[in-house]
Length: 139
Image (cartoon, rainbow, N blue to C red; front, side):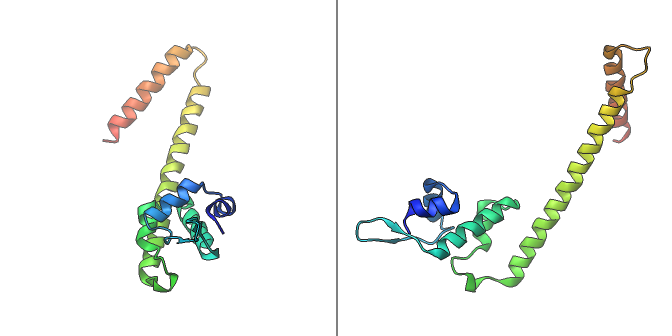
């Protein structure tokens, strides 16, 4: 298949495919007599694998480090270690996001439940003081 067909099937732009080939994430394409690149089914599978790795948070340099051009040369233990490390990164991010979500809910609750006798401006000042004092106390 040519690069436009590969682009259509993979959902990646042709410049992206050329870039992946240039940085050796994708094996160098064979050339037809007319100079056009010729790709095969394995190239498409490799692009899907790259996309899946990116979706779970791997950078291109990380993918390049663990994704050999020939899948028979994969080092099982290194690959498992990298995947487990990425799971740990995701779990850490989930924890941070959960804390951020709880902080936002606390702030919304504090804003919505202001004492009736104070203005919104006074409530804003009350919240600033509350968060400032809590932040100082936690240090």
